[in-house]
Image 1: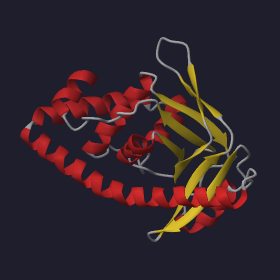
Image 2: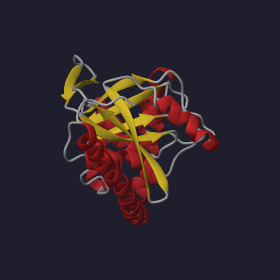
Image 3: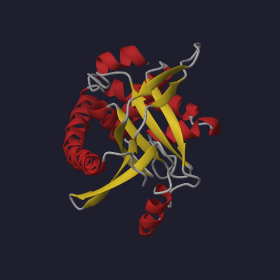
Length: 235
């Protein structure tokens, strides 16, 4: 991976970020469990909300056409095309809503081939990522019994948003880092990462681009589990 001038100080900064990201992934698992319990309790008490989530899923399926597949797989990608868990429908719906409202920005980084779906070929994926061109770079950190990748950019980069009925907008991101998730992911994982850091990198299966996602919303997913309010606003 190419590095800008800065030497050891820059390496220390990147490693610190990666360790923080790994710790945050562990914390998110606990937060995810809390959100799922709260949602299940709400759906038991209000079965009509379950019907509304079914309506939301039906709408989402219509967006998963081939030309939209790259962004949809960046937000949520599981094996098969079956309906995901209720909490993932909820977060997936909100991500698409923010995308359509112009609050979710993105750019693509060409890595020339998709990730290998074979867990035994993780080294092959790392070799592919090592070829990413400047101003981007990849950093890896070991922690909590896992190896975590991060996407770095050493110069300002431009991300884009296309809001329905309006001209496309751009934002400039200053040099920084983002957690990089490879392959399948749940919508709630994408959502919680964007909620915490406002930025996330995704390399989904079947795609030869890494997609850098950024939201301009500091309160993303605030109150999402209050379905009485959320459903009135979104459906």
